[in-house]
Amino acid sequence: MTRLPALYVAAVGLVLVGLWLRLARSALPAPRADAAALPVPAAGRRATAPADAVPATDYESIVAANIFSQTRTAPSVRFVPVGQAAKRAAPAAPRAPTLKLYGTTLSPQGAVAIIDADPKVPGAEIYRLGDLVAGARLVAITDSDVTLAKPSGPLVLRLPPAQRKKP
Image (cartoon, rainbow, N blue to C red):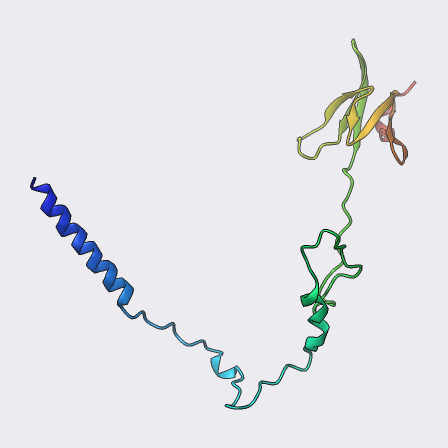
């Protein structure tokens, strides 16, 4: 039973600390160094808009539009704030993975090609006829090249001349 009064004392202490934290005045943050440069409108006068500001009437169609409508379509031209058009660079086109043929050989299961196609896997991988290589089907393997069938047409990977078999 001696614990009960101790718990009451602890609870009253926590309540008092909580009230003190709630009611105590917090210190104001230090004034900004550039606060003197900020424009302060005089009493009774409206603040003037910057010279490069877009008139408010240009935004009325945006405010009036229902952005959650199921029939809404994307705008044909993306909105770019004034002054931002020069800063934006054109996005880089996504690059297809670089494919490099390291060699071809015969195995008991048939011809295989050693191709570096997956940037996530270090080094080259072994591919057989019919395998997918970077989204293209491997359709032919010869002693010096391989042919991949892509939707845009066949892609032929060749060994560099120094690595080709000499008859």
